[in-house]
Length: 197
Image (tube, rainbow, N blue to C red):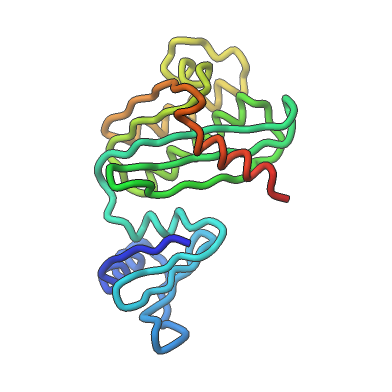
């Protein structure tokens, strides 16, 4: 449950400008409440508490945005193809901004990796980062996106196009292959999502 320390009046304006319906609080301690993207934000005197299964969208609207982020992604699947999930972590010099994992249905391992990269980039974009340094432990996906390898599979080609379109929305980006131990948290989040019933 993310807790964002902020000027709650400013946060309310930011949500209203984004088209989010902001309502009065339910108790005397709540300044206001807003629901967006599967989560609810509740404002108190100097902080906003976000609750729900998918807090990223509303959390991103409450943050200032801009700057540089390190983005980690990983896909997991049981069988190839099989049940699949994705994990992502967005980090700045101040620490973890957001992280998460979710099931994506049935996919191959490479499709899951692309889905994880797509989700991680969407989250970083929603938070308003200008520059992303993206890291993943799938050498194939990293090299396909960078143009060093061809994508012969039609579905992987479509995923690559989507990823490149997302990357083009940032002022600057890098995409680097890292060993699995560097990507441990994203891997853990993907596997946790896969294990959840």
